[in-house]
Image (cartoon, rainbow over all chains, first blue to last red; front, top):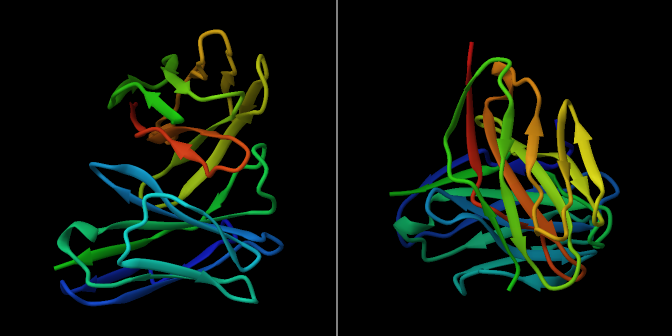
Length: 114
Length: 111
């Protein structure tokens, strides 16, 4: 157990629907990062939050949004889902933002859009 | 922009063979470099890291040396085991940016 908890583990939904993925960071970690892993694109950085504030954006679609709550858990909202959104979505956390700090990853949410 | 390039896989080895997975990077300045490992059905785990040139990261028999002159961070292990079968990701990080990953290299070790 890495200490980063992601729910649900699996999600199957239809095109056009909206889903919410949840992440609880490791205790004491203030930064949360979301990544999308697909076979063709590899691991793509989506967005980062630090202590409730958005800090960095990567290749996140406008249909996707996220937030980090006062208790530091984070949610990734995916709307108007398309078949191509099927992927593994990982959340990671770190105690600091500096370059020397690696991330602790959760076990991911596998999203299947049918 | 910053990027990481890993050797294409899969890499197939017999138990006790020597492993090298090549990783090169492109970055402005001096990033920190990482290797992560992903076992089937699991998230990524930090394997080792190096934060400045000539640093050697090591863990569980794996090693990688930060070579600024060749912009490389190759992963090596002297004797692989079946339990090392996984996907290995090279990554870099600079101040103000998130971790950037290579596409991953699948390692398969047979007994």
